[in-house]
Length: 234
Image (cartoon, rainbow, N blue to C red; front, side):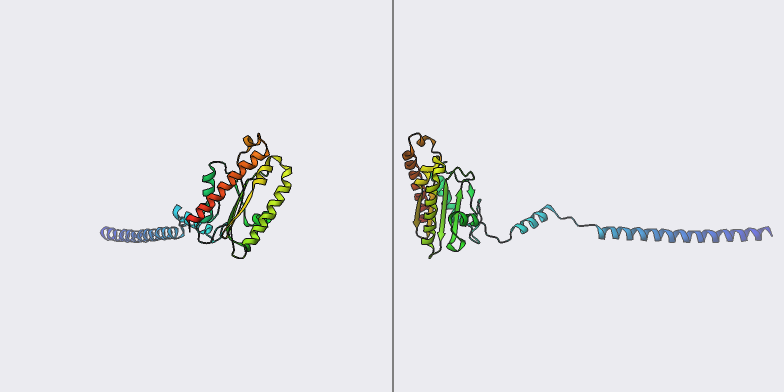
């Protein structure tokens, strides 16, 4: 009787152990599966960060909008002030020739060109124009590549501007010599206005005539520098 009871208890205990082991295995498998699912979800939802190179590329693309800068031919290549390569070379020829006496430091937009000189966008194919940021200074360089049928009109607009400058120069006596020495020159389709002189203080000690003579010499040098650059490019 005791042996029979012992056998029954052992069988019951074995059955309980088997059931417990089976549940433990299922729970373990379920846990692993759940963990794997969580990891997959986390990986899929993780945002992809762009690299520095990709960010720079996007920025460059937004800047490359096809707009032409003041005085710049489409496809001509950019320059520091926005001028076309040709106009940049012409300006550089003047700057090099004057050796530090080139004072204009503000690029003029097409709107400023029209408002100041009366030269509209339908009158030219290309241009560069710079004048001083300080209104008390009058040093100015303007080079216009006029359309074939607009060369005379551009010249007339510059003559009218020069006349106004001469009449108004009395407001700034220190600039009378520069204004009177200003010059307009036409070379083919290029109409040029030079009102340069740089530092005229030393010449001013000798009187207005000395200032005019000095500025005329500088303007002549600027014109010849432009002429030489145009001829070398032909």
